[in-house]
Length: 530
Image (cartoon, rainbow, N blue to C red; front, side, top):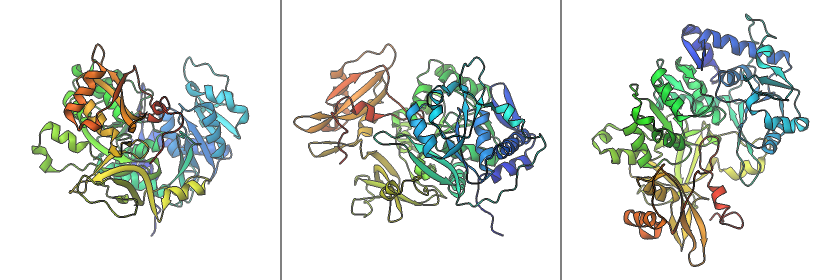
């Protein structure tokens, strides 16, 4: 009676019970679950006819469109492995990933085909499928996606493939900063259990209308590509993350759930339209990718009425391993106190396994909110390893535990709070300074829209904190005023010793700050990681 755990089975269930329910909305197009199921089945058959079968790898470079959603199901139900690509990577990185992943086929959106045009002769691909974009010029030669689907008859039934829950479902590459990208091997089982966490802890239900603000290529949309289908909810696709467009969709499509990095929250609350938007659905929003400042959470809840849910994880863990569980006793606290609690990463989810914070000797830190250690985890959602890289796998998984590289404390109630990445911790004169703690204070300053705090070299102290700040439009302040504000709101040694004002901060495609790019401006080589 054994049945393998695979999120693909949820599509079967959704088509069976919700055939006429709207499954996907993508601008002016929409598909019912029956129509969505038929399109994914035709994709599977077309892929099979093109020579793709069990164990083969198919790379996909698409924005958040119905085509991307179809690929997750159409490719994987063949027993093949999907390789989602970050379309903002350089041509060199894309060449490395496509060839390293052993992809036999590439499905690419014409808008992002430029880098592929540069490297196409160096790719070991059997075929390229392109998604046409109106008004987009490309020299890339490939079969059109819709024409590709026509290779399969409308009433075709995909092959019945026996799935092993421990086989690869997706191969997700992490962005390399000082080394080549690493291919994270995620299985049917790990994706299934992570999506179950997504459903349970984000409260996904049949009536949810989910907005895909988070790139689907990033850890499979954190599991949203599977979880929404499982509940028979509606996927709303979003090709580009633009605040006015998102605010319109909140009103017009009655969005009830979304996910995004803190930078997306910041973009929404600071858009001029934010205070004019009447959002009646009080959407739930899960945030992760970087520790969100309590002040930012407070703004999201006050200005937009969002119900913020803080989650934490990594691509290597499918990705969720912690979430900030809300307790009824917190309801009586002030808005600031509630936001401070929601800024914590929280506790283990129901289906992921065990997570704890340890000292270098392996002993767990005291639950006192003070002792600093590294977050480690083990269990159902941890990757199988890095593809074709046993050395890096062994460095990351030691004695059965995955080491995250994130430094945190544990409070008496078991809630974990990240203080920094090991590489972002500032060690000044022997004192540890959390860059995220300093950023949390800066976000409370009325003139600060975005900020990043990094270590810069210092002759006396070795290194000291420096704040790099994007001000609100028309705001005006000074370096001295910012430093005085920090010194008035935190221990003096933690306050930035220098401030620089900039127009924007470097970010990844998922909105995570790229502090390494800022540090490169001040260090001759990579900052030493202690």
